[in-house]
Amino acid sequence: MSHIAVIGAGQAAATLVAELRKQGFDGNITIFGDEPVPPYQRPPLSKAYLLGDMAMDRLYLRPAEWYAENNITLRLGTRVDGIDTAAKTLLVGDERIAFDQLALTTGSTPRTLPAAIGGDLNGVYTVRTLADIDAIAPHATEGRRILIVGGGYIGLEAAAVCAKRQMQVTLVEAAPRILGRVAAPETADYFRALHQSHRVDIREGIGLARLIGTDGHVTQAELADGTMLDVDLVIVGVGITPNDGLAESAGITLDNGIAVDIKGQTNVPGIWAAGDCASFPYKGKRMRLESVQNAIDQSLTVARNMLGADQDYLPMPWFWSDQYDTKLQIAGLNTGYDNIVTRDSGAGSVSYWYYAGDTLLAVDAMNDPRAYMVGKRLIENGKSPAKEAVGNPETDLKALLK
Image 1 (cartoon, one colour):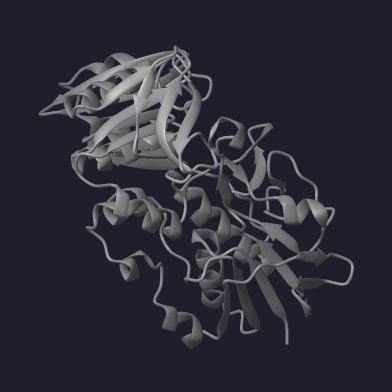
Image 2 (cartoon, rainbow, N blue to C red):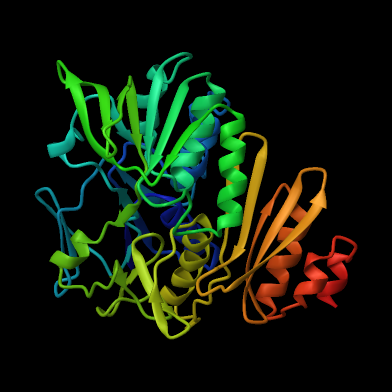
């Protein structure tokens, strides 16, 4: 009987195996995951779960019993040590496990601070796994002093949760402003003001020089400008790197992650990749998307193609971020924008529309689901409304779809 193996047990893996069964694949499926728990949602970790508003079992993408009911073997807490592409086997400890097709959904790993500047001290955390949050939560208590390194969405979301827990929050961003790589200055201004209204101390253009510890635990941080801060714990949110080492050691081509074609297949026939770990062709370039949308949609395409569908993966990117009572929804990719149109819908709802010339690329919508939904549909349909119409609050957004 045919055997499909999946390495990695996150959103991409869970989506892929469910689609295989939905499409009628009745062979053997095995998921290998480093963590000891079934595939779970990551976005709520740094928000509802850290706040204590979500129980662990609600994180699971599917109940553990679902896998058994669908004849899917979960090998949790299990590390795959190697892939023999010629023999089509996996090396797992002393075992050699044969496969007919293989999906790499290995995800990504947070960047950490070098040990030379104190990154290995106790009390220094990253935000990626259930274990990370379980380690942070007991220390994220009222009055404690936390330093957050990095002003991207992960850092800002962590800052919001810690501020809600009545902690003393300082966030440092070495770049000139927060969200410098991912959002327009207007969006950065919005979130800077939001965090400052919740007493978060945001310091931009100032990097971290080093962390200082006592008895192995972080107690102080020295910033690049010489400022010394007393800290009880540190969260590092300075980006992630794709988990592509296993693929590399197997001779699979890499290019900012595991390189796949438009179908999701690597350079080795029968070996596929999806999610954070995979880079794919898009508009003449190669890109890697770190999002739930990409993990889901790319995995659906790969699952179908493993069964012979021959579909192209055409991403329709969307993202979101929850901070305090603000829900940011993002549609599209803003790469290459040269103009921002602001639409103030009133009552605390605002959206920023990214254009390259007259072409709409993306929308950032804060507490404005209508702007997000209309913008998303416009982008997906290749339509670009006049900037004047978008910026006029009297314009009926739905009329732009006609």
